[in-house]
Image 1 (cartoon, rainbow, N blue to C red):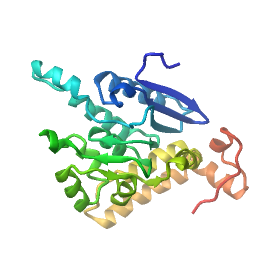
Image 2: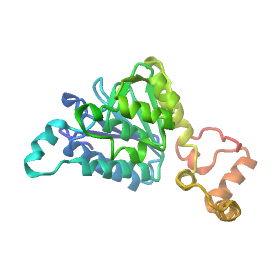
Image 3: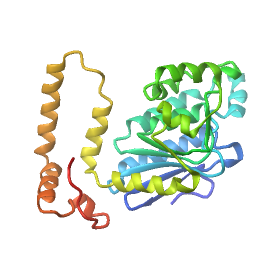
Length: 269
């Protein structure tokens, strides 16, 4: 159970763990205590075999305002800043073996955009706003570039990084920062649809698919095909692969779906 004073609330239902940023007094800024709680919640979700999907959510009107500038200013006296932990958080989300989905109902700025980009999927309200505000306070979006630049179209990245201008959810979807932008009234339903689809995947297969998505471009196509063929064969011959094929042929739910709610099986594309 999440403690009452935790800055990240944790809840789990039907294979989905929701990590809710709960520091509305400072617009869910990425303070050291919040990032520590987020890392702990994520590690707990990864370790729990019953968890299939992780959702990043927030309380209050703001998803995340970026770095906690009050904490950063206080740290100047020691000659350090807490930005290093942000790298740990982004890496943990990016490398999570389970699908991570960000639910963005309100504004996100700077480091908050790095968190959204680190998630595998992100759904935002069309009314939500975004901005890479770093250059306007004399710094650069360095750490978050590790997750943001693989998502953004290059021309859009140059425009948004250099101007610091604010853009809405529709533009965020157009440039690749988020997966989809929907009217605010439809946000929860859209998140639920994605979660319902994600929990139907076999846990090991979902982790393997995430690894494929992270592979760098191939220098030798034939060598790449040979390696990928070996991966494909390994999964087809795995316990989950054989169960999935058999379940499809028998028109029944695979065991990982039946374990959740007994929904009808889905075919392979």
